[in-house]
Length: 408
Image 1 (spheres, rainbow, N blue to C red):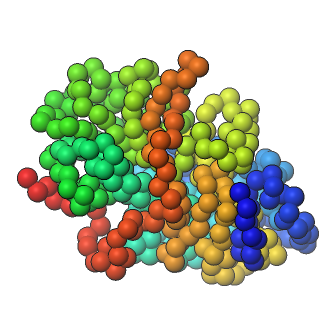
Image 2: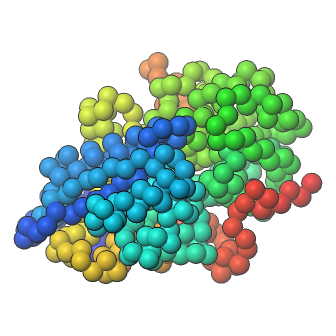
């Protein structure tokens, strides 16, 4: 891949390492980075991966980025809004962090957005809460993952145009991430002539999905945003229920990190995600190998996102000469970064601080006795607004349990 290096462009990979100038920064006070992760419950797998991803990046650089030593403090939110806000306050007021990485869940991000803005803390989150980079923009927020609906827009397009589905039932957990997942899918799918005929909302903690699956009939497909560790039992119960129509899902439904725990019932599952472990970039091959060597497990989208967050912090520090005192300037520098190659492909940020990058349609296959995600289509430079006019998109309500409404 050929690229021209500009002031705010950085090549990530072995080739980049040979062309980037070696800049020496005066050693200053350590940069304090706080992480908001989830350590318990159905989302804990993601919390573990986010910590592993950032830690791997820091270990590879001996906890020193652009001449600044990094002090990482990890806080467990407990997976609820109140816990997220309390831990954010502790990181800022007690631990005096300069940057927050996290939180994981959309409902957590919504709980802390006003606080981090009031205290001018640059925040690099995984949480997809759409409105934090849309109708309620936070100038101190940067999202290198995706909004909750961003990958579901292409999935709606693929389901209608490539799979030729026409009548779909939707099922996702009963919280903000689930609403925005399904809302993004529904809007695009229906704009292309399809119809979502039923929406089902099991609680985040659900042991038995059978009562919800029993309500699915007279459709030619099922779209889901099930995430965390829940897809393991959901996909098996979907198969056991004897439902024959295709199951398609969002970024969390077939995360690469979950594949070793699926059975053959997952073969053929199609999902959309801004990352896939099979991507051909050299930087991705190195990341996948390093992660497996360090943790003896498979890296997923969450781990990759926080690995890239380390890259973002380092690139911004190089731009500022290692300085972070001016928080407003530091977040502006981060938002202006353009990466011509990362393990997930090229990416940059829009004027709201949300990533613009590729989304991959993947199908689970069995190769060499292992389940793997195989990329079957790439949607390039996907914005959080899909192909819609930004002003018209922002004039509509945020995706909720009942928006878009069912037309039937």
